[in-house]
Amino acid sequence: MSKPEASAIRSMQQPARAIPQGSRRVLKPGDVPAVVGRGRFTVRQLKRALDIALHGQTTEADGKSHTSR
Amino acid sequence: MHCGYTVRCALEAEDTGTPRIDRIYSIIEACRFGVHDISRVEHDLINALPRFNMPFELGLFLGARRFGPPSQRSKQCLVLEAERFRYQKFLSDIAGQDIRQHGGDPTKAVGAIRDWLVSMRPKSAKLLPGAKAIMHHYQDFVRNLPAALKALDIEPNELGFVDRAHMMALFLETRGL
Image 1 (tube, rainbow over the protein chains, first blue to last red):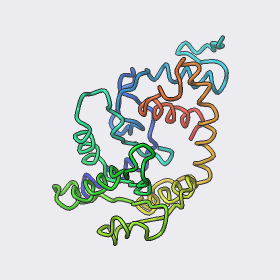
Image 2 (image 1 turned 180 degrees about the vertical axis):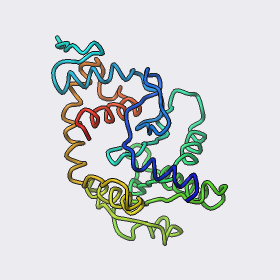
Image 3 (image 1 turned 135 degrees about the horizontal axis):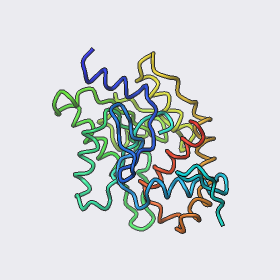
């Protein structure tokens, strides 16, 4: 199997994750970004908004829950 | 995205100043798989003219596979149409390609893409969710989107492609999908 083929198969076997450019998370070898490009919001802002929509609160990096007001 | 692939779209870099056609070239070059829905060729309401972008992009994809360097030869594409054989009336040259019908039904379109991706994957790859499950999760996302937009203090039309796609990815992650 050629290297590109092996790489393509590895990519198929791994789930895409939300690793947007502009966030603090850094792509590691083997990571498959779900989206390419830079948006208007940071991943943290989007995550916070989604948490509020789903749970009515956010869970920040400090591990504490922050209820939306 | 739900099937574990990176989604690409010319809209992902609207603010770079790069000409749209160059963005499309680079995206097509980077993608092994292409899905082209040519069903939206109806006349638009303002100009009463058909939209040709999708058939044009399909042509670029096929051209890259045919004339590109060896790295482009493994490209695979799926063509979606609303009605069986309708394409023969406006794009007969693509006969022989992998063309599937969705009848204008989003669940059928998702199912066609999902089934096609399954056929492209090695047997050892993990199973993909079914079309109904994918649509169920999408509807779950859509239901929760207004509250997320409210938290961002923006209107629905202000959420660009990249942010929407990032939010979908985060949603899938949150749901453990």
